[in-house]
Image (cartoon, rainbow, N blue to C red; front, top):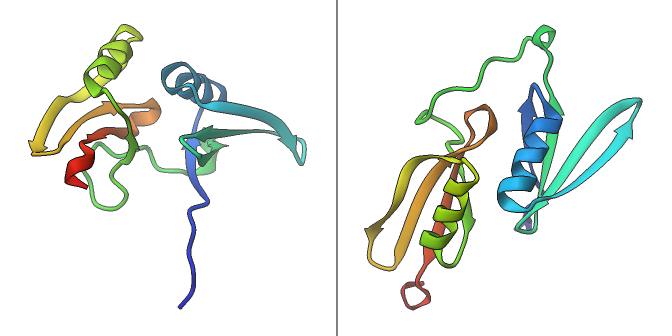
Length: 131
């Protein structure tokens, strides 16, 4: 059987710089700015994952972001420890929460926030004794 490993998430955005700054400010993402074939490119590292930002212009014919929930890729999740303190810090940064921290079942506490272009991001705080 083939072996699969995680490589990247690709986000389309009308404003690469504003999106990169948001992830840098909110989550401390490592942002790398470069030029490829004469066009600006912004890549990020967040929690060990590669996130590539692709600029979308109105003339590109790309559909607007859907409103969650919807079918297909719904959100991505980031593991954290100490979710209540982290959520409080994110609120101080002006981050919009779509679901406040709560425990849907024993051993896990989660919350959801809205990123640039309506991206849904989940924070998960797992109790190791339940994994």
